[in-house]
Length: 122
Image (cartoon, rainbow, N blue to C red; front, side):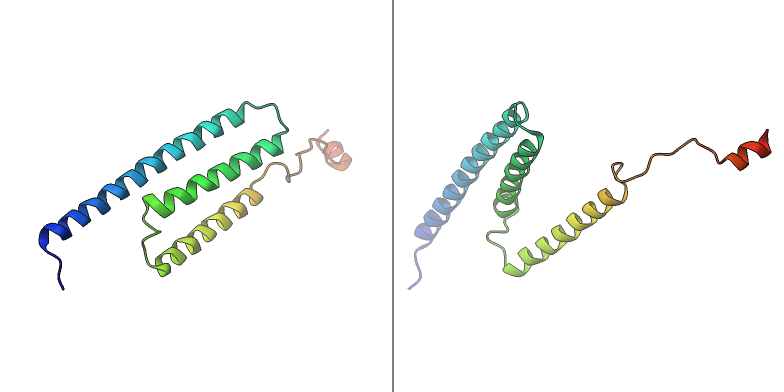
């Protein structure tokens, strides 16, 4: 049996209202996580602990944003898989570029010229 138009409209409106409040609560949660990130920066802990905490908090925020605000939660699984394949490719490219151009691994330039070159110039 088909529901009357007024009942269908009311249930659609209620669903829209419930999604609205989910988004509002999620926005508040993201604001709290951002506040935690700001406080974490000024804590007197070892640098690796701070970086690990910031990476974890940022990952949690990223997951909330992509699954709710980008609607991946309600999308088909195939679209979610495609998104994560692109994410892995982007992360791998970023890691490779950081490794390729990192300063810590490069050798310092030396100004010591071989003795043979110094003799020929003088």
